[in-house]
Length: 191
Image 1 (cartoon, rainbow, N blue to C red):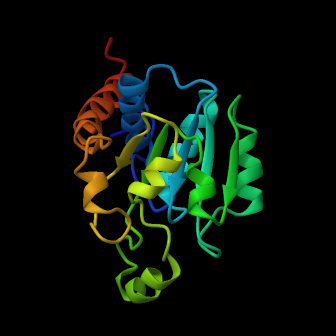
Image 2 (cartoon, rainbow, N blue to C red):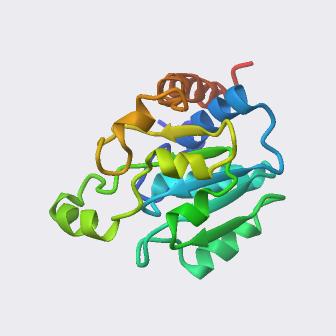
């Protein structure tokens, strides 16, 4: 049977829009309007970072990526992102440079599903990209920490950050429910 509901990819290796909705909702709840602010993403350029960058740029938020050499966005991808809206995207291969002045610091696992065989090599290549207290101190005063979960303490984030007062990962996880409900209501025309 045919349906009038459009086909929408809610999660793929390339994008994770529902996570981006939950991320934006959580950041707005914590920090208020983000227009003109900088949001940092540290780690692997993946579906989560791509969707976060897209929603931020569309809403006038600047994105600062901190990705190891060989694990970042291509120049073509950066150009595409910078054409999406009033925000902007820049990329550094130094994590501390990426988080400088950011109101929010995001990360994700260094080894996604299907990449398990690469874990040891990735751990080596991502050295210095684990979010720790010194990295959070380089961000803006009052900056929040965000992670889409599951998190691996001691790798992409230290326990004192994800379990500390700057962490908003529980609210972020809770907001995935609201993001999914809102997206489904929109797609189904529920008012």
